[in-house]
Length: 456
Image (cartoon, rainbow, N blue to C red; front, side):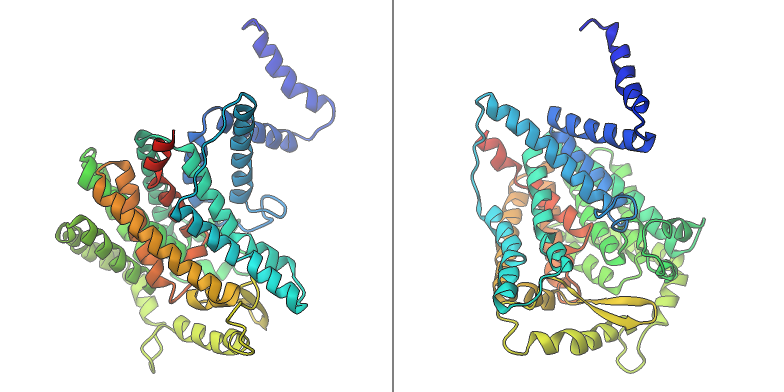
């Protein structure tokens, strides 16, 4: 087509739907959808770049607020899948068949998805229990993260692309850290801005509790994302040795984002993650020095947050009131049903919450990762989780020790993140936290790039 006709064709594509009476917002949404699918089909690495760049910023938007039924990050995930599938079909039609091989890590993630969805749903059907829409949505959770893993693994093929992914992840995490810090300190009206889209109606007070939920919608996820990206930053410092001043500044900002979350578990996760990094790289002293240097700054900046959180300690047990409440909720609402009639063998149901009638909340969620495993899928899911941890920790440790490039950094961050999840599952189901899981499975996929290149 002659170049002179291209502007006219573009104008016709835009004007024709308007002439037919299609609303402008619908037209913009349709064109945006077409643009994403087309761009990903033409240049697959865009799939991983889009996920890493947008997920931490939109994953906290409540379901149905911007898009009916779906969260914005879920809609984007479907569009990206559509682009990659379209490319795959074109290649298949051209006679280019994909060479697929399922490794131990792939099998372990699939086992997590199956034992958290199909197994419990079949067990509910066998017992004659009603399967609700809540059960179906929760059953799809691990399949969604399997999709994230496959998208990143299939779209990123080179070390340079992986390096770009790591920089995108750390940069966006710094943006989240700034939002969390401003929210925790209640500066510049940030809590009010977040209340428009990042919290359920009637729950706006949660944004003023000295806990930085930021754009992830969860203070636990904020702490996790900071720790995971801190491992990436340390890897860039140790092995890339470029833009060191920038990376150090990012690392300091990520460290400040952890106390901004207001979570004690965030500090525990930081210790676990740093020890994992230090032991794997044999640079524990250097990592510890950076932490000691940032600690006084954090104590001064977050003195109001620390004071408020210290006021939430139970004088009898010395534990945070939230920890005491979660144990009480487990004993009252979850453990009686879980441990009656041997329900823990194959699980109770995929839905990880129960309806309550309390002032300010309608549901209680399972605030224990191990209880969630048994409640959702029973012993099969618990075993699948242990197998996943064993396989993934061994693989990422091996890759991190063997490679001093972006793939090795991704393996280092994966190893650190897996160690954090393994410990913090005692407190909350961090394996499925929005934001936390998205980043963890993306890093795991980046750590597997060597295998993808060998198959090519």
